[in-house]
Image 1 (cartoon, rainbow over the protein chains, first blue to last red):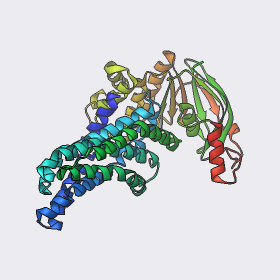
Image 2: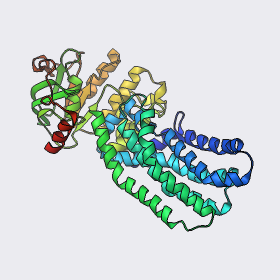
Image 3: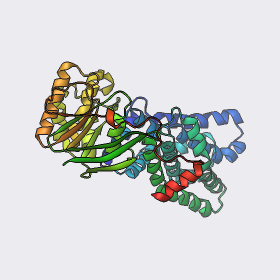
Length: 218
Length: 218
């Protein structure tokens, strides 16, 4: 099990891996939005929570199709399916690997980008906390979408269309946590909802994704 | 018997490809599957490997006794030869010694640190076959194992296979090439071919009704 996680992490850091992709995209969004919107910090601070969350979500989306497609193309997925690992475990580990190289990395750099968008410093911890709690849901929902589209050539568009509606609750509650954190309001409710979505998808979706892969390998 | 197959029918894309296939594989024996292209050799192997359900009949084998090698080698191009093999030995729980021995047996030791992207097609194939050694499983299902191997490597592989059989293993091989195993039994699949366009399930009128009845029968 650990070997699979190690291999996936190693592959994502090697050439052609997904590590730099999401981070670079997130950085680009945070750099370009102030240039597009203009330097007025009041406007920027208002839209910052939403922009940061949308950027994080799209950055996650970018590398989703790699979760299973690469293993499908070179035949490793067939071999993993006949290996002594439960497919549910394979899916969960691949989602964890995806989260470590996208969600966790985005969470760690987010305060830097919050400066660019002049998000008030009081909201930075809430930004990091909401990303840390919310992005695992993005990875595991994405793994489910990737499992559904694994046999399809250039399934990236279909994958985005399938996954984006499922991402909406995480986006809404995640941005809401940051917005309330910035204005000093109570934020327990959106935070609890965000955590509930993550916990629910972590518990259920690996099983659904494993079933989808088994069907797609036939 | 390591593997017993009784009245097996396999389907491909909803059509029955082969039916009433029966054979048994004792320790130390090899069965070579023959038949024209597209007759269903790969489908039969994938069904026995558990990657797709059988349309009818039984497959009896001890749990976790089957190792499957597909057309694709499942080699990660960004990793070195030894990293590729030690990943699979970690997955199958056979340890470092098995990796070193497999590389030595398949004549890969001098290539151990080379990235798999720089291997020739034949060397990649040898790496794919070395994976069978690190699985430590008795029944090998091999799909065209000698593709892109030169004479010398075919002989090397035949030696490895003979050792595997001598150690009480068995192999089911789909191949057109004579591996130099005079004791191997040959199963010609031509008589098992079903009439073209016979449906795997009785015809259905509407997609939903079929989906529901399929779900209910499981």
